[in-house]
Length: 226
Image (cartoon, rainbow, N blue to C red):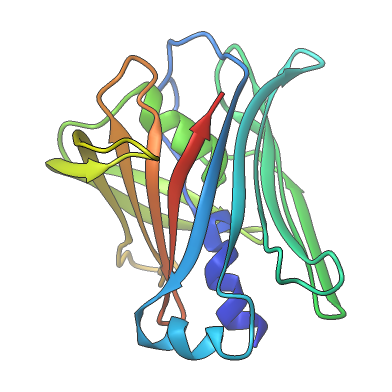
């Protein structure tokens, strides 16, 4: 079952960006989300496992580095279960120094951590930061870090859409980006999917995130940025 639950956490599988993507000075940020499992498989999983909860995406300066982290939890969890993914990023270059992922769910725990030596590779949280800092106007090749493995992906800008943001009554125009694995010779293909909706504000606030893996969709909606 943890494979289905990995869908709720698979944001760890995303995303990387090319070197030199960001010129924006890192700021401390914290975004709170509500998540739900979607589609048929997600609904079936929800009969046996938590199918909704809260998520936190944070970017904070710490010891001269930028610490980016995503934490996903559920009030329905029995023993403090969680999924956590993050990285330490060089503030000067916005290149990650180290990435990690960990979870504890119904008695099973797993933890991965590795140094990032290859240029242009980020985890999901710092990858989202990269796309926010330098939103692509045309398809852009990237790399993802997942449990110590690296996969090639492409980020596809899908234009402007109207979405409801948080508790606001009216829909707002946001930018939609789709991240997919690609086939390359002698490379593993990432089988997951990730979609981001970024507000058209100065911060390019990530208002929605949709992650698909193992046929289950995890949909995160922004509740409160601060």
